Image 1: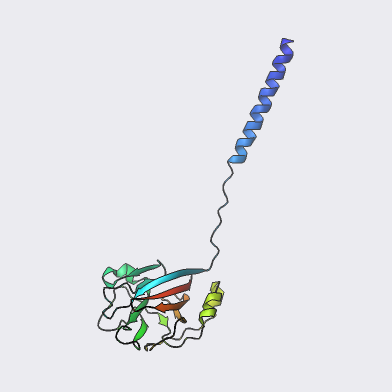
Image 2: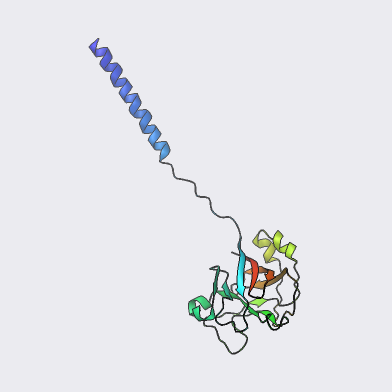
Length: 191
């Protein structure tokens, strides 16, 4: 009898060990990493400062970092990434607003690391509703961006402005509102 119970006990022990061992292997599987398959980057409610002087205001934006900068914060490395610069004299002159090119700033400023971009500063070829419907880079790639160095003049918000950064990535700025202190925008740009 002692031999039977010992055999049964050994069998039970072996089954338990195998069951626990197999269970541990199941828990050691690697987690599946889900990659972001979006082909555009979306920034919402970015607030560009409205300021006649403009040098000490947050109006220099990098679409690669998603950051706004003042002119004094820009060095060669940051300047290389700045794509969008807003110039707005609307508190005193509502007809003098425009997007500046980093390599061609208004006045006698020169931004370190600046590169050329294309940007529309006139009635755009895209509506704010079209902006809302952009979901992938293919929709942006097919757009033609015409560069303009002229001021916009008084505008009715919202409106959409096309741009192409120095890396050839196309994007759209949806200018939503301007309260005289900040112009609030959403931005969609190719990754």
